[in-house]
Image 1 (cartoon, rainbow, N blue to C red):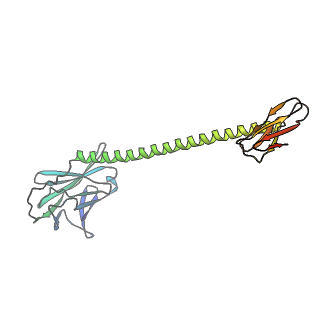
Image 2: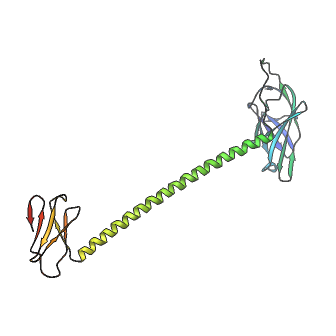
Length: 242
């Protein structure tokens, strides 16, 4: 249930079905005993913008204060009983203080019979501010967690990039070594034998030299300073001369 109140400068009027009521709003539509049900919606002129505003409900010499939410709304306090009550607005910002006239409400009686007394108590302004602070703190905490997760993901990406760079450098180093071997005149001979169990050597008239076999089964032979090899022997079950 929502009751709209127009606030023009320091004057409040209740908008009841597109027509304004006087300061005494008598209705049987508002009944005592409700909680977070009867909502008052305040529409302000520009001079109320940026003010921290609360509405004060008064009844029987007691006052109940409610801060307006981000939509300019507040609920009727559960402590308000049947009979007459009044409400007014109070807004502040630094040294600025704004007040309004009082509106009078006539609250109808609640005929529900209760076995126990009501425990619904409106929070003081201090507790309402603490609730707003805690809500803001939770939002800040969620933002901090998201930032930490983003930073962690960025660090993991940087670590992966570092590993990829190291592997690329290692591959480039191997490629340079292969190029150097090719440039020095090394001879690459393909073998159809697997690497495991294969042995090879190259022979000249005066000596026998071992021959390297890489993981792909290729032989790498360094050239002689003079002359040629007489033969290259690969032993892997069957002996083969090249």
